[in-house]
Image (cartoon, rainbow, N blue to C red; front, side):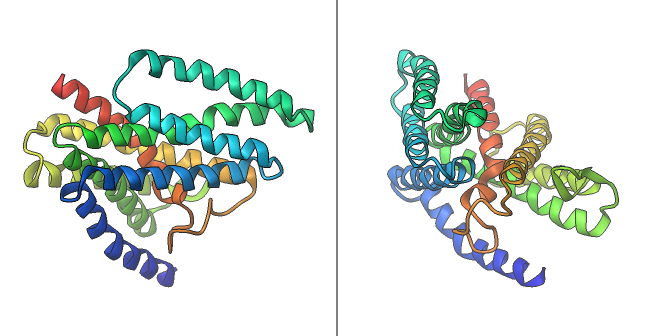
Amino acid sequence: MRSNLAVRVLTAVVAVPFLLYLLLWAPSWGFIALLLAACLIGAIELFGMTMRDQPLLRAWGVAATLLQFGIMISPRDPLLSAASVPVLVIAAMVLGLSRPAPVDKAASRIAWLIAGPLYIGATLGALGLLFLGKHGGYWVVLAALITWLGDTGAYFGGRAFGKHKLYETVSPNKTVEGAGAGLLGSVAGVLIAHFWFLPQLPLLNGVALALFGGMVGQLGDLCESLIKRGCGVKDSGWIVPGHGGILDRIDALLFVSPVVWFYVQWLQG
């Protein structure tokens, strides 16, 4: 346990300065390229878990995820955005017909061909839109603080005080006490943002955003745990030292990002 924690800390020491550079000082294409890479790897992990014996459908799922991401961050064309979802549904169902066997799992494959690109491509696209907006780098840092300080609070709070299981069927190690500590960590992230680099974030609004975003982020973590448990794997991948795969690292952020993006649209709109 201590060895794994040390690897996580070392990974953060390397990754955080690089991410801050991309968000605050580098050309905007740098962070978008990073999101595109995360989208690609995350899709490979997801469809590798859910469609191990279907290489054609896996390839389509990855391609559709990248396409959904591109549509999300492209210059806003309401017609294109609106058309992308029904096109995705129809294409997934037609592709499901091309690979019907085993028939008893056909509905599950079709469902993942629809849900997968939205789960990864659309949510990372929301993070990209957040970044491309006014003060976008700082808002992305806020989303990361809500997510990762919440995750840190839940980890240490659960280890120190955890007694009551939160959802043992899906994630046996998570506790109610850890979840509460995670929400406090998310609030701490908002306080850091408000007093350090986002004074335009109203404090009371920010606390509400932290509590709601923190809860949504914990749901994202549980949802990815359920996917892994259903697929019989411990980690989605191996690419992030101490964390497993990309999805293991960004599962909560995928849910928090649209929440923060919607809030910013309301605040600035």
